[in-house]
Length: 335
Ligand code: UDP
Ligand code: MG
Image (cartoon, rainbow, N blue to C red; front, side):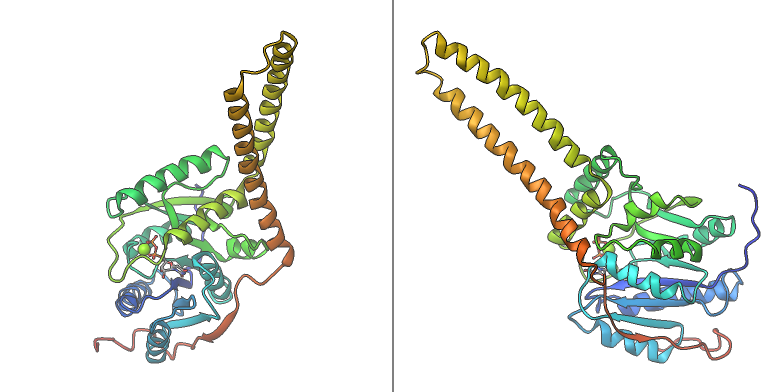
């Protein structure tokens, strides 16, 4: 890649938080230390910040976040009016942060994603990447179920023609330019991992190790995960609909042949047997039809939601303070 000269960026870390009271203080400390170090070493510009997005937490997360931000202007807090889900929460954070930052990195609150990889993200940004995807090295910290379903899911997504990057889970750097472009996408049905690669900016991949959750438990319930998986498919691909058409054609051809056979059978006088065949055919047809209607319904539901043009999130409160002088004046050793 030709060496583009870029200025040292103001970097914002966007951190979505949903019921993270057990881990949030530790996260603030770890992420804060890292950002301060980078600022001190001149790898990122002064004025870089951590922007927490409270996604309608029901525990004390918001109270803790406000306390953290009140003590230290390094931290900013966007609080959403309710629980809009991980994707909307990071979108809200990115859209807010792009006003201040040259580059935004989204990272989970649970410290599973190695923050030390940030150096590699920055190196790639300095070399000209507009988007840098964090890809996990392996999945040893996941259970068998999550690992298996994830692998299958990425396979299916690629089969359906999505450009989604395998084992990339929203740990990602985006430049201001890429974020401005992302802001032009108005869809409600949001699947960032599938959408961002289709934008086509110069991009890069950075590998990082996944750790076990620092504290608390996964906030991605099975139903949240399934919603994300379905959104991923229906927002990026109409291939399921095409498959239905193809299937419909095949079934039609099959029934046509079956009808001829039945007619010939009837003409030859043996029209009493065939109960089994009749049952099988009608059950099969019923099944195929219901499944197809379900898939079509899934898309109609999405169209319905899109036509409403509802806001994707509502911001309740926002805390952001200008750094008073140098950012390393405070050394937070108190606990
Ligand atoms: N999260 C969120 N809204 C939700 C669910 C999760 O903002 O409705 C956040 C959560 O606080 C965390 C990140 O999304 O920072 C990833 O969630 P989690 O670590 O629970 O998922 P996992 O790593 O188990 O896939
Ligand atoms: Mg996690």
